[in-house]
Image 1 (tube, each protein chain N blue to C red):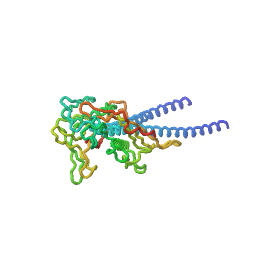
Image 2 (image 1 turned 180 degrees about the horizontal axis):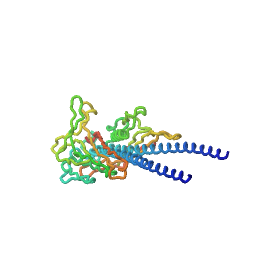
Image 3 (image 1 turned 90 degrees about the horizontal axis):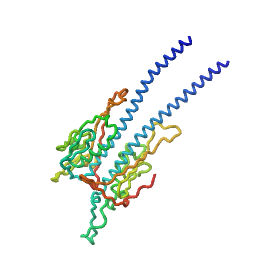
Image 4 (image 1 turned 135 degrees about the vertical axis):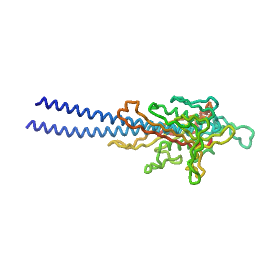
Length: 199
Length: 210
């Protein structure tokens, strides 16, 4: 009687153990797959931020880097203006964005493959699309161009009880330079575009 | 009786372990190899994109002076004298970004600096880029770029006719190919494939520099 009960208990333990172990293995597989996927995407987003910042820096007018000054108003045509030429003057704006911001956002959004619409991942965002909740924000402190990229990543095997998306973020910066053998950079120290508020 | 059964169980356990361990090692080797391949591919994509973008940091008419060299990181020095400075900038960015796993890569060498490629459309046949005179042919990356020669002659870059049709847009393209070889690593025990990785990037001219 006692030995039969022990055998039954042993069988029950075996089933519980088998189910528990299968669940553990499944969770482990999910965790490994999701971690690997996030690892790949974090590298991709980091590269996109670096490329975006570099593109933004390259879109700065080189005359600014050589301390060129702009044409003066008609009243004083011969005198050099005190105001430097920068590509953040009003005529370089398109919509609400300056030239360097557009270049920065275009490059980073394309590189990070940020979809315009979640249902159609092949159509990617451009500078004219809203850059929230995912997208690129570009700013400059007058010395460097900063790019902050956020990409919503859908996990391949979502863990039960946990969110199935993770927002991967990365930031990159680059100084606008131009030169032949020696790069030249000019830094005003005055923010062209203040840093975006944290998301 | 009991002793012989126990010996049989032990033998079975040894046999099972001997079967399972190689399979597990094989799987682990291939998981690691796939991760390495994905990482290298991402790095290659980033390096070619940054290389193409770097071209714009040099003025269009800048030419490297005599004695210019660059990028002797993978054992080969590239002589860039007489070439557009943008080519050297592109190469420096590429080699500076490709820093990890380089021992596993067998590069398909190419001409560093080319010009004149055309994506083509109905009216214009596609054209392959041609090498700049004097461009080194042992580079790991190849960039098709436009420039202005000292005399003022314009050398066209790559014309992408999908942009700004039908005339197209003069862009910079960079490409690189390499095969990933695990032969000199412990992974060679279970990895029997040698994938070829390829990356191509295109950079659009910034508004104030071209």
